[in-house]
Length: 222
View 1 (tube, rainbow, N blue to C red):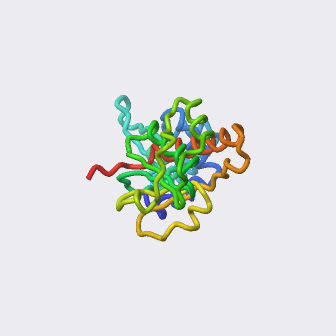
View 2 (cartoon, rainbow, N blue to C red; view 1 turned 90 degrees about the vertical axis):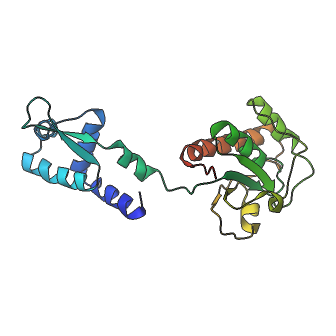
View 3 (cartoon, rainbow, N blue to C red; view 1 turned 180 degrees about the horizontal axis):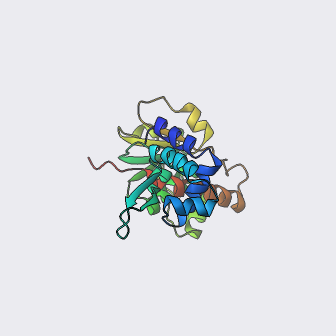
């Protein structure tokens, strides 16, 4: 759903009466008369609001299999889902990037591998020689494995068709602009604190973001 269509849906939901109708239909289908009774609303006003909701493709209707003169309204869940789900480009891989490729990007790639069938990789703008030991440890505590010797430079990893997700402000600000899709997660660097708590906090934030993004990134099988 494009931005204009999503805006129409938001506008349709912007009236308290229409929002009440949608709330009612979340639980089950209803006839216009039943909606009017449940919401203590005049039938002509219900009809007006239903037209707005149907025009926004939020509500559909079907004729009763019993009394054919009767119609039932039903919510269109796909429309509701679409307004909360932004358009995400198709990706051959998701590549997570931080400065040293020694903590946040490694954790993000390890988490992504468990959450999505879309392949993943990680890289750094100034890669360290090794992954930070606390990153390896926090991953292990959560049942994930990171190779402590495997770091890479972003120029050796990123390819056409990749969705690049920077998980570090410095990396985001120093990445060379490219034509491919990019996202940025401003995750605080746990290395300066160098405590288990700091790495656990970074892990939790990245895990939450991965959980939100993974279900909506379509893979590219070319």
